[in-house]
Length: 309
Image 1 (cartoon, helix red, strand yellow):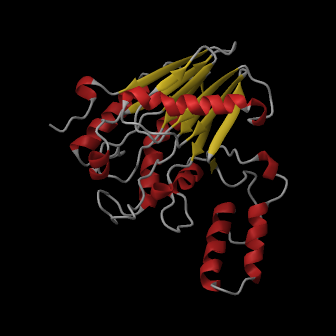
Image 2: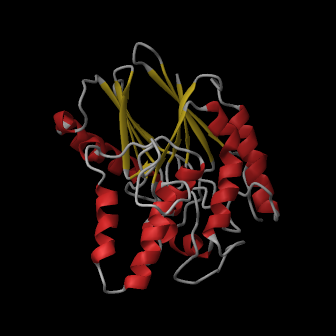
């Protein structure tokens, strides 16, 4: 079986990939994305598509609208959904982890744009199984009926939440057989006796010598708490992250830790703060029935890599 990883597409940014390119950079990124997709070794055996967060750039709350081709993140969600549709069709299931609050849940907003994308793609939920027995979100919504303060805003939130839960209906009942939400902070599951985890945040370093430090540190911590990670036994572990906009990996025969590259070139903020250049690409993890794994990064290089000068 195969697992495909895509992360940090930052839809809506003029520096990021777009399904309908409007500048030369976006055209190069889209062409590169298609080339990376075509390099996937097992397109008919994709078990799950992993989306590592920051799939939308957001409204750029610190400098509203700067560097964006749309100030409506919902538009960017639909664009990224269109971009990812070929990979979604390959996979038996889609898993989405949420990215940085600044991008996908800015300010005091109630909407998470990675969650919105997960809803659009009908991603498979992986909420904490200990919470399944009680529909806690519905219980919270019921309580809003008795709260008088800030009533108009609370009523609006209640209607928005119920609409998401019930496919447009604002009646106080749960009609869908798919639990809400469809995204989460950390995904973990066992395949062929291998634990695979997916999370957005991991330590960043522009220095190649130190990029493996955060990956290995997390691996050690999780290994020391093996009995607290998941119900079920496993003999190997693969930890996957987004966030850092480069591809790096560490590990050994039974431990693999890696980051998924991005699809956003450096904007003014990154150009000012980070001396390194990003990696653009897709990763494929092939997992054999005996638990052996292979990592295949498909990244842009040479004439496919966008260089401005």
